[in-house]
Image (cartoon, rainbow, N blue to C red; front, top):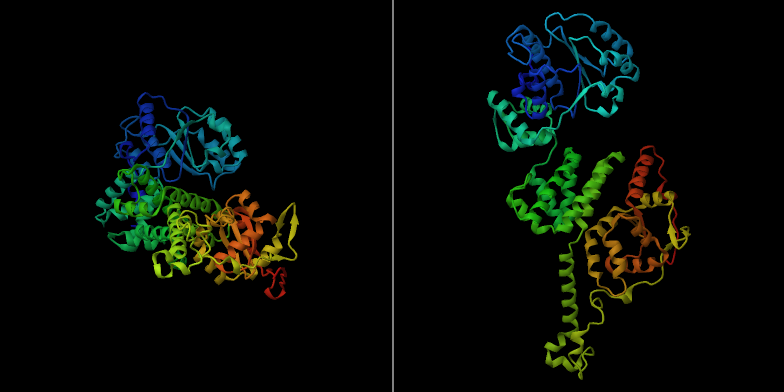
Amino acid sequence: MSYKALYRTYRPATFEEVSGQEHIVKTLKNALESKKIAHAYLFAGPRGTGKTTMAKLFAKALNCDEGVGKQCNKCKNCLAINEGNHPDVIEIDAASNNGIEEVRDLIDKVKYSTILGQYKVYIIDEVHMMTPGAFNALLKTLEEPPANVIFILATTEPHKILPTILSRCQRYDFAKLRDHEIRDRLRLVLEKENITYDEDAANLIVSLSDGGMRDALSILDQVLAYSGNNLSSQDILSIFSLESKQEKVQLLKLTAKGETGEVLKRIKRYIEKGTDIKRLTSDLLLILKDVLIYKTTRSFEYLETIDESDAQDLSKLLEITKCNAYIDKLMEAEKDYKNVPSINPLFEITILKMTSMVDKSVQSKEREIIREKVANTKFKEEAEPSHKEESPLIEKEEPKKEREIVPSLFDVVYDESKVNSSLLVPKHVKIEDGFYVLNEEQIIEVMVMAKKDIKNQLLDNWEQLATLNLHPELGKKVSLLIDAHPLVATKDILLIEEDLQIKSDKVNQIASQAELQKIVQLVFKKRMFVFALTRRESVNLQQKFINLKQVGKLPKLESINLEFEGR
């Protein structure tokens, strides 16, 4: 005998066995008891939520030998429907039978009387796939079918069905099943199949099923085919290319600590082993949601993804503002995944942006360190009486004034005398209304010339920009760089990505360039022309670069000659 899939083996045989959808079950049972049976029903909802199962249960309740509303599963009608060979319960797949000829054939057969049961039930699955012509042909029959004929239309996309069809049906909307409903059903199946399992494995399957009972049982079937009679979370992770909860928590911890090197190693490993990046992004969002909930409520009862220990550890590393920023970045990435040919680079960029974020609390500590370093350097002579008179920084008449006012916090940390004040600007850059403008071709050339080691060096030290936040002249422009992310870098040009157009415009103002170049020289010891793109521009240009590379039409490195003024 051929193997029968679990979702078919454990398909509910009565209304009472249905998981979830209580409102639909109650309404249909009441309609059967009161004999108020409509001639057409529309079952709409996500896949695997029980639409076809409910249709067959309804057909069984109409035709059971024990009477309307019963489901004895013993009579010839119930058994025939369970086995899928009842002559009066006709299941049609509209995805492959969607034409006008198929509908006309169906209409011709509607007029014939039943063979075995009391009602003839037509279950049309994926009905939204029918052509407009087929819908129109069905319209009259759907409105006035013979007394013993009932149509049940099932669809995942009700918005695609003609309004004239919708108006002739009683509509029932199926919702995704709740986690505990899927979990309870899984446990029942596992016990009946004599499968040993751990709770983490069951929870993983619930998470992967996304509210669909059929998907949950199909996943279980697949895992059992791999692991035999022992269901473990590790097997599920291996089969579906997923990362463990602890791995995801550790990635967020390293990201929050700004450990770029370790983060890059982990991302590389994910890509090499084929990890489902979309799923990983979604799981990271769920973890961050738990962290945010814990930080705002200080209660563990609302945690769904992580345990108390992980929530406490992550909450220590993530301020609320930073947690919200992480969530925003990951949600932006999820939206952009459908616009790029490969999501791996976009995921890597997103995580690196998150890694380079610096908490305000961290910035404050860094400022205090700078203040202390400057103060100690300027006033260390005061703690050494033997050198007190020799120090040119101490005014003998008013020794305390220097303690109250520090002329510049950065004289010791950064030597501004070594900054080259001449502006480094590409000779062929266009100037419009006070802004520098690089066209797409020029940016593509910069991307071809880019040096990965230069970019990595910038990324590794990006958080050091925060040390200039309090600079009396450069502080305002520093924030433009802190909030940005370095896209590519050559020895002369730095392309950055800003999340807002207004920030991109401020970077590209001619008036801003001198201060931005001074900041880059002070922090990174490099003279670079700084140019900003918005997120949308960045995604579009990266995709164009990849497309050109795939067809071999990128400009050759040796043919690119960007000359600069002020070198």
